[in-house]
Image (cartoon, rainbow, N blue to C red):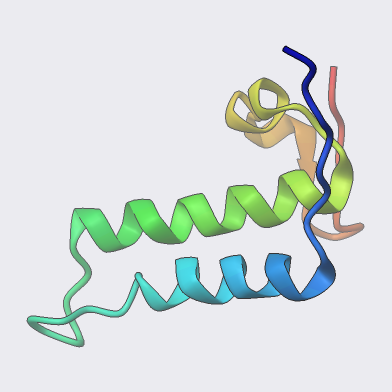
Length: 78
């Protein structure tokens, strides 16, 4: 079968980001982070980084602090 390529619209992508971030709200105790909420926040951050850089999933999930420059807001992928 022949596949097709589909690209998310800007609105669809924004909706995904909002939904991921909304999932991080703490339902039981709004001042106590849960592991699930922290994971969802990390997932939202990774999705945003992947889409904004074109980096591959493995490049982002294996980043180490020496590759990140917070002052210049850059990451070095290799």
